[in-house]
Image (tube, rainbow, N blue to C red; front, side, top):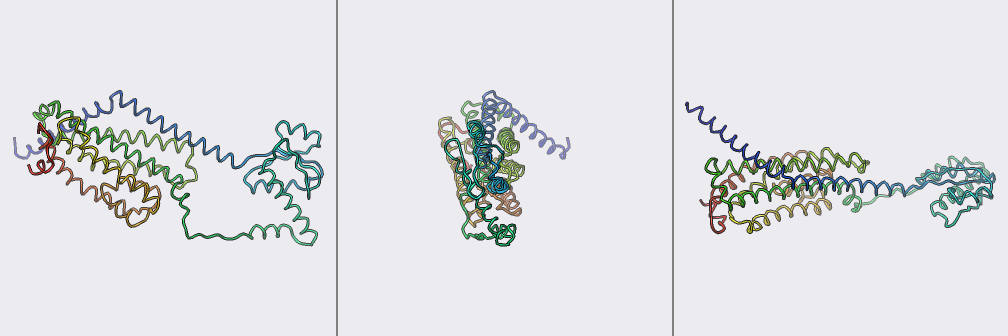
Amino acid sequence: MSNDQQPDQRRTGTMRAIGLVARREVKVRFLAKSNLISLAIMLVVLVAGVFVLDYFVSRDEADTGADYTVAVDAGVADLEPHLTAAAAAMGTSIDLETMDRAAAETALEDDLDGFLAGSADRPELLVQSTPDEQLVALVTTATQEHVLTVQVTELGGDPAEVQQALAQAVPQVSSLAVDEDDDQFGPQYLIAIVAISLLLFALIGTGSLIAMGVVEEKSSRVVEILLATIRPSELLAGKILGIGVVGLAQVLLLGGGTFAAMAATGVMSGVEVDLGLALLMLIVWFLLGFAVYSLLFGGFAALISRQEEIGAVTTPLMFLMFVPFYLSMFLITSNPDGTAVKVLSQVPFFAPFMMPMRSVYGAVAAWEIGLAVVIALAIIPLLVWIAGRIYKRGVLHTGGRMKLTEALRG
């Protein structure tokens, strides 16, 4: 065998070993019945939540513009065009019918909302019980417009010109302050929170799976059998790759299902947010975030030997995720283009949460995203070296918990 063929064969053997471990992790972790059931339940809950939200949004929109059916007698016929115009201006509609008082009183018991009688300049509004405030305001506006039109005509003016002048006679309001309620907690905020919450769930879930898998194999001594055939780096790489596939599948199913439901219901119609771009950013930053955090979960988990001690490893790393998660919720909503936000968005441990949220708000430039990706890719080899060194030293260590400094020195 030539010397040139040996490195190629070693690389082939390494890739084959990593692939075998990765396939095992996908089969055990993703295809497990418990995981499939929980994933299906979460998907149903998220999609159902979108449809419930759409129901309430649609109901609120319907409540803001009620339709009215009003009967009029011959004395108020001149009021009809003003009633139609006033209804349109108020964001509602009105159906007008002509009938006498006796017929109207009978119809009021069924589907008639009101009856107008008397004269156009001082009409009587007859209702069945409690008058609707919006209907009263509508009739008042129409009556005033009718009276104004009559008065202008009698003075020799043009009612259309007067109406146009009145419509333009409104103050032009400008504000130096930003309406925080609209900008911070509107539909954009909802989409951003859904995105980074899915990301947090996926990163914590996959990181915990890696940590539990490492500790399980170490405590059961299975790792000693595995390391008789493959190297520690191959075992850790295969485990991370396999669980990464599991996490990516979860993100695609949950995120894709949620955003597809949003697009199907139109609950975010009118909102300037590209759901496809939001999903793409979620996937990109999951992959980068997973690469950053999973290496730490896998390496640090090798320092302990019992499942009872796993919290000592996962808790600090989860805290490292919760800090950027909550900072994204509060810093970006209050000042998405602030200096602190821009700087933290470039830190690899913060970028997976801050960049998707800033993208939803439209407060991030393309070069900022590119720079954050480059920095994250640049730090990954360093994390690979650190995690690999810790894992190699710690995975065969038995007894008490191994100190981090001892693993790095070895």
